[in-house]
Amino acid sequence: MNSPHSVRSHVRFACPTVIRWSLAVCGSALLVVGVSLPTVAIRDESGQLVATQSYFDDASGDASVVVVLAALVFAANISTRQTWLRIAGAAALGFVALGFASELFSGNAIHTRSMFTYGVAWGWAVLWIGALLAALAGWFVDARADSVAAR
Image 1 (cartoon, rainbow, N blue to C red):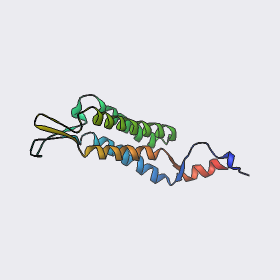
Image 2 (cartoon, rainbow, N blue to C red):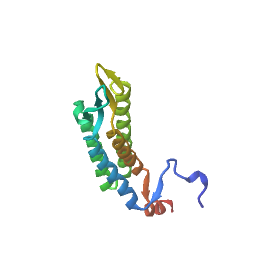
Image 3 (cartoon, rainbow, N blue to C red):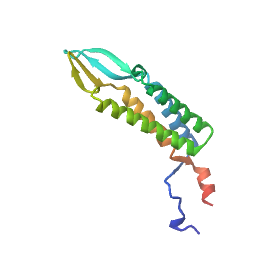
Image 4 (tube, rainbow, N blue to C red):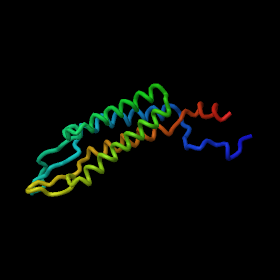
């Protein structure tokens, strides 16, 4: 007889394996693609786009860390290591959040320098979606494994 107090302390959602796999693979693919997309847009006084800068152009090594975290998400998904998938997904989400906050609050995101305006570009949206999918994949478990563990 299961009492309400015998439920696991952490939240997990039972789902078919294909959903977890799809979330993790799509999330890691979007992270890998997202680091090469424009994250900073540079416009002139008339509002015309002059140049864009990707996460790789930053030269701080942040893009390499995101690619490694995406590879960890993919590897944890293939090896069915649920804990590692959860950790790698959360780390990817945290790292993208820190990079975005750093871009916003460093003064480089939205301001005017001489005759150029620097702004956040659409590549951040792809990075955010990829990180959210990767983190979400860690919270889904195979429905069959969950029902066996509940017995």
